[in-house]
Length: 60
Image (cartoon, rainbow, N blue to C red; front, side, top):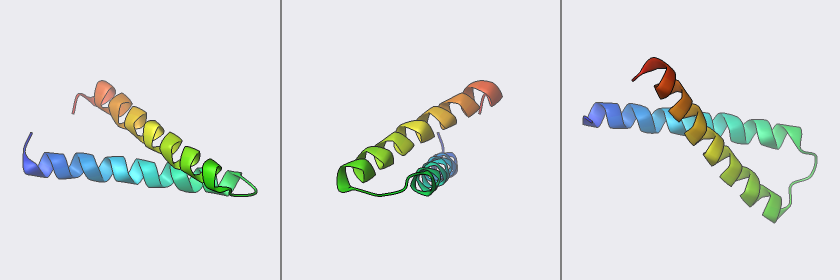
């Protein structure tokens, strides 16, 4: 994996994570500390799954 490919993969993961975290924050009514930590972690897992699914489909 080249440096450029690694940076693109990291940027894609960060973009997915940010989008899922913002969506989660938009959908909940009250933010408690534990819910915030769990939501951010779940967004990270969702971002990993989204990147893996895209790579499985496109072969990139």
